[in-house]
Length: 68
Image (cartoon, rainbow, N blue to C red; front, side):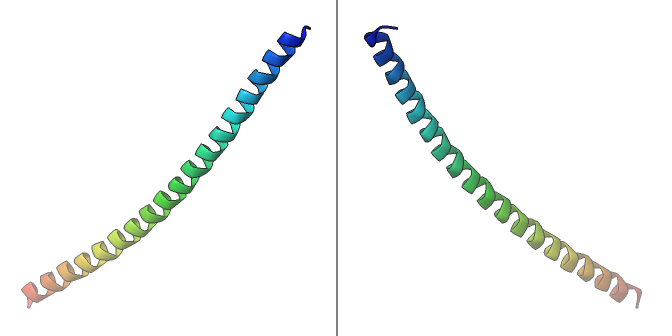
């Protein structure tokens, strides 16, 4: 293998290493965002369930008041 071929190979490897590092950083960012969205989603589901239970309780009370 000639010296020029080795230099080209080295440049390609350097480019691949740089791209790999860039993709790793991007992946970490996306994973953090995903975790944040999952946390937010869980909070929203909990809030929805709480509100739903309160509404159902109010409906039950209203129906009981109608029967009196």
